Length: 398
Image (cartoon, rainbow, N blue to C red; front, side, top):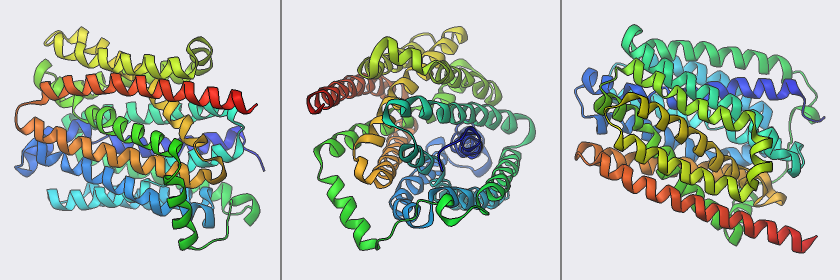
């Protein structure tokens, strides 16, 4: 049974909720610092804990997705995420919040990567980037909604209400997916595969010995640390340097998502204009320029809004190229390869969050952002070179 538009919509719903959950906390750091009597850097460990759990659990979801079925696993992840969102909302202290968010990261980790793996199995490579861009539209919208509502709820409702609404969203996704997939036949509902955990470990180690896999994962870790890690602290910079409220900072980050939608909605045209290599290079340059602009224009809010838009457009150009390369770096074992990609990406993010939180507490966030901008420009160049190398390899084979 092939992929349908309904499949994309349902996967998009839970992917929306997953990304909203991931980014909802970014505007809450200052409020957590006040509520729990800790520094912003210490509060940011809650975000790092989510990312670490998200990354580590990819190594588990690879074999589980093969044995139990990606769609079934996504369904139950949505249901459990609803419960954990309620637990997060009633957390009484920073330690309880950190524990709840760690569990949330470990469970939500199944949703987007296994959706990518399923798309990789169902859609031919020449159409895959456009299909992934459709899924990306849902994730970008979730990012926008999460960052905006996280800031809005923090200022006007209380941050706990943000997680109560998130629980309702996950519960809706769970019920729709359960109804759609749990009553299908075993063959249609999963891509069940035989094999032991030892077989999976051997397969993973074999993938890690491939030069192409090593290169993609190294670039992915770097992107996670710099681009994803840096994104966490943009709302804090908007609040401190531009004197915005938490809700206004969250609203400003909507433009980051708008930049992503500008890419995802016109992905085919961008690809035709720039090619895969050109997308990666342009994306890295846009992110670097946007970060530098953000530092230079303070306290002019119009300049900050333009910077967020440019960063968002560039980020999704670069990330979509890496995401597409991840689905092709080991076609013979795609599910494991994609979960490795997601694991490394979010372990990179957690590393970036921890390092940047240290810079924040030391008063060096501006200097750190300059280093992040330079690093991302280099990553864009490296991903572009890797894309050209892949194209030459495919051409020589054919």
